Each structure stands twice: as structure tokens, then as C-alpha cells.
Image (cartoon, rainbow over all chains, first blue to last red; front, side, top):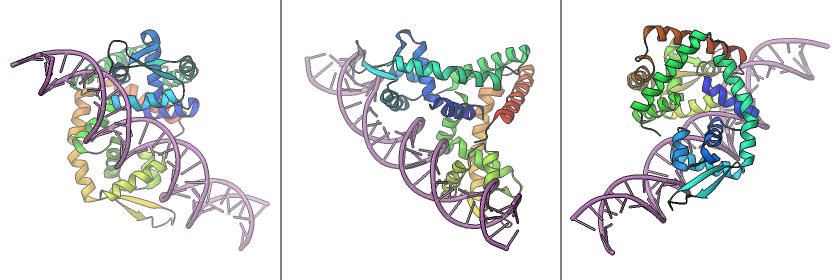
Length: 133
Length: 133
DNA sequence: CGCCTTTATATGAACGCTCAACTATAATTG
DNA sequence: CAATTATAGTTGAGCGTTCATATAAAGGCG
């Protein structure tokens, strides 16, 4: 319910699906605001196919550019454009406010700490058991 | 990451998306294994449009049937068929095992209790702040 | 070096979801 | 009681994801 709500919130307020927001966010935090397609897919927890299609759209919108990888002729590097960075900074405040309002703000410090441990645990299991997409 | 993983797991092992699993699950717990479309949509946290399309597919697969509502000529009642119930009981053990393995089993009793409170809190906020789809 | 396997990415069809109409019935109100 | 408004559900187009497949370049290895 939470993830669906947050996706709807982003679509409504920023007109961007949450998965695309995630792509922009991962790129914005990467050195040079750029990542190889495979790394980007891993960072955004997406299949390479999904990322390929997604970058198609994001490039059409002018938020991302493709560049050939210098050392590997198979490789593509996705680079966040200035327009993409602005899109992200415009969408981010509302989104994180929603996350805080629904999830974090109502929790006591004790529950917040517990939630950290719970997420770490689940993350560990996902890392261990998981076929990455 | 969790929801995406669980959806993939269901698609792989049971060949059914998680949202459809959810529909079967909600119907199986309802009295008479049946619900009005709108109630079913609310129970599965889906838009009525999504549910209409979903029931189309589930009916094609023979897992759900549509019946006219007796008291309201606009109404449709979705009924879980025996085949649908079997599909669900076949998919459920693997799915809940995955949920337990990733999320619940690794947690101490204290963290488990905390998680209950955290989920209640988030659920409350979602109920309050939320445009239901 | 030529062959084989692996890795990096793209492509297209099929499927599920969303959004914006649309139809039909029920409820309300002047 | 007609006229309006609200409710229940469907429909179709467009978008995003998946899955299977394709293409091309790297990396072994005999």
C-alpha cells in the first residue's frame, strides 16, 4: 500500500513514475551524475531491459543522455542532464515530505531505531536470497 | 525492493502477478468467496478500473466468475471459482514462506512487536491522508 | 590466432496499470 | 415526479514492465 501510494503521489504531483524518479535519484548521487547502464539498473533494483526502455523515455524527455563508454565499446553511460537534475530537485521535496509524513514522523525514537534494524535485516535477506532482476 | 522481489517470486513460481494473487486472496477470505467489484477493489487497494481489467483476465483463466448483483442492477459480484481457490492454495505456501524468510523469521520478538506498531502507524496515516485509488 | 563463452545492451510483443471518457442504474431534490 | 446528481462498473488508448530473443564486443583457451 505504501509503495503504491507513493507512486501515485509522484505521478500526480511531479508527473513521473516512482521508478523513473529512482533512476534520476541514483544518477544524481553518482560521481559525474552518470552510471553505466548495468550499474544503474543494479542501483535502481531494475532489470537491464527495464532500464534500457526507461532511459529511452528519460532521454526523450531530455532528462538523461546516453554516452558511449570510453573503455568498452559495448557499454553505454547514462548521464543526468541539467534539466533532469532540475526535474529531480523539483520533485524531491514533495516526495520526501510524503514519505516522512506517512512513515517516519509518527514514530517514536525507539520505533525509528527498531525500523532501522528491521530494514537492515530485510535488506540482508534480499541480498542473500535474491536473484537480482 | 521487497515488493518487487515478492512479485517476481510469485510470477516465477506461480505464474501470477502479486496483484492478482491479492485479488484471489481477498476473495477467498470473503463470505461466500465473493465480493462486489467496488469492495474487492477497496480490499485489494486497487482502482475500480484496474479491478475491472483484472477480473477480465482472472475470468478468462477460469479463476473468477462474474455474477449480477441481486439488489442493484449496476452491480457485479466477483466470485472465486474452485479452480481459483486451488490456484491460490497452490501459490500461497511458497509465497508466505518467502515473506517469512525475508521479513519475519530473522526478527527478534522485540523487533517483531515493533514492526507491528510501525505498520499500524503507517496504515493509520495511509487511511487518513489518502485518496484511495 | 581462430573458436567459444560470457558480458553489455537493445528490441519487440504481450501483459498490467492508469487515465479519461462513457453507459447504465440509483438516489436526491425542487 | 421529472430533473439533476451521484454511484457502479466498463472500455480503450497509452505507458511501463517482462520475457524471449538478438546483436555486438570482450574474454578465455586450445
